[in-house]
Length: 131
Image: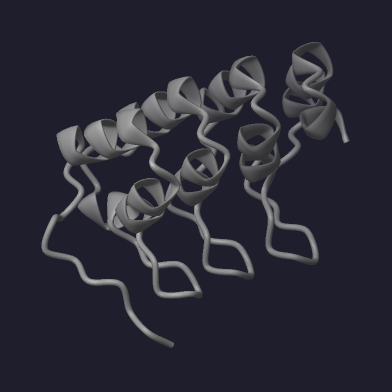
């Protein structure tokens, strides 16, 4: 997949051919999630420019924001947060293990991530859910 390899030129070509950038695979993963996980900032930017959804969740309940935090990709996390358009639900969404992105960032010691999430509306009052 062009997204996983970080090939922005091919991603742009596919998007011109009307490929829906929000299609999910068998695991519920979208191209944006794969680009985030791979740290491909240019591809993330391209997908966001083509209406990729930041709030969509995969089969584990994780959003692209969760994946950016899990891989500690600060620049990509900032891009995603800038494209949430004030949707606190996207910033505060729980994954399938009952963790919001802020919980993950704290657990990982991802200081920059904690700061960004708080700046973009992460709720300090959220408690991790035990499932």
